[in-house]
Length: 426
Image (cartoon, rainbow, N blue to C red):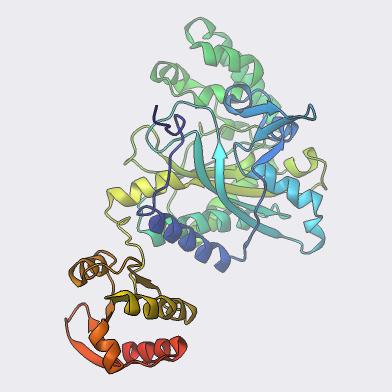
């Protein structure tokens, strides 16, 4: 039986890799301009980390995590999101001692056992961005602006929705009002909403069922229950976004799916991916660092799914990024020429060129076809007659013009000659 990848897991093939590499490079370019540094965190963490941060009553912890017991009897989980791991590393390595505001990002695979669908896999890739150490509303706007700038530079059109979830001081009153509203609708809610109404009532508003959404149209709005400090904070976030000329809409029913969010939350949405409309999302998590055993520091961040970004780029014909072309293909004819070409190709690579050759020494016609497939800019043709004369032919594959090069015995010298000739030809 032919072995295949697990359901919800996908190979990224060589002709797809350039798009992924380009996307990561574009993200790093923007993130570095905003002062963020990259951190690489482990794929495996203690299960307790995600239960404490994400929330035991969330779908991720209850249904979707890949969790197992290792040989030491410890509960281990493959990370389902990036924030918890980044904050664990922030605390463990005392990064707050280095600067007042720590800006970090990580890029890599995450794992959730959910139904695979367009733009959503069981192993998926995320960019996760975190800023720890300030609760100033301008930081909220700056983080949102960075996400907006990144998508804008990708050429993607999205809309921004924002909300405030309040804080531990004002959320209890809203929770009571919401519970009273939901109590009258227990008999008509879906099973998930019935369960959430007792464990995590705010998540009820996040239900994707159109039947449930219709019932919640008249639900209490959290923005009507904000304490003065949270209301002022949200007003300042909006004013800061206005200063940056970033358009937004207020969605009072956006609650996000994780327990750790407080105050500002936001989503970047597209209408091009069907039900999977969120391209990026995030928010403030002012109590999470302390909850994980660290200092009492505020924080804010966001995540973007790379699969969804690539789907959007493909829809807009922006993901057809070819692999870097070969600088020089060496076509060698005959064993003596192949033997001479082998160290020459190595020398070209050592000089910084992308070089290739046919190790088998096939016919010139076959090798020229191979050079075309590799999109070689130049082909160096070396046969027995050329060897006898101490020469080689350098062909410009675009113009088809050829020139004769002197060909000595030192591969490094030959490589330098080829590079100089190619540079002059350009």
